Image 1: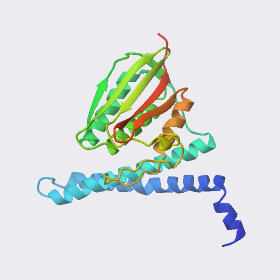
Image 2 (image 1 turned 135 degrees about the vertical axis):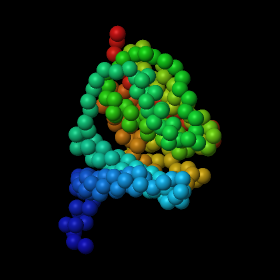
Image 3 (image 1 turned 60 degrees about the horizontal axis):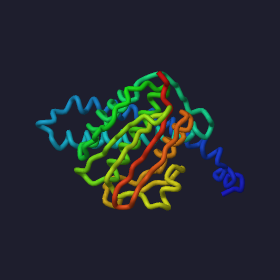
Image 4 (image 1 turned 90 degrees about the horizontal axis):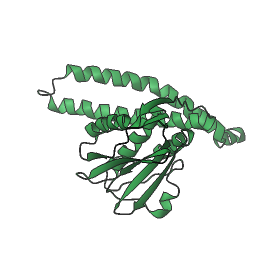
Length: 238
């Protein structure tokens, strides 16, 4: 291995550029795989081909997971280069939360997502990015909680801000890990879960998104008793 190559692989800028290029290149074949899988799903009779239909659904799920990983890597690259897109508009946060819950509930069928609180308040923020934050928090809550437990998402007005919380009743987070959980490549692994270990990017990206939207995120947790993630976002004064 040449000295030049050794220097290059340890150069953070070149590593980030490499991750960005590879992630972009992977998106095209994954999009094609997703399309072909959708065609297969439409051609298979689920009632008469139960096993085959099940394999296709599992393949579809794995493609989605790979797509999520690639999108996270692209977001990290955008954050490092200062090019993460933020597009603000005025909307009611309650409606956005309801839409995200309805989508996640179809996936997290082993948990019941309970919605509490009503603000009916407009905020000026980025719908897509806030949906990304909420989806990440709900996904983590389901991942680290036993089947059959509830996930509670609450919201309230606090002065000129709205505070949203996502509570689970899972394995919890040790205090030492709570201090670094929002940094890159820091994750909590659930030994009782069949899911692959996380890359530790979701909470880092969520934290960076909220910083750019004028908000913040934090966690309260006790090992064995679950975790509550909070985020605070400015609202539009009516």
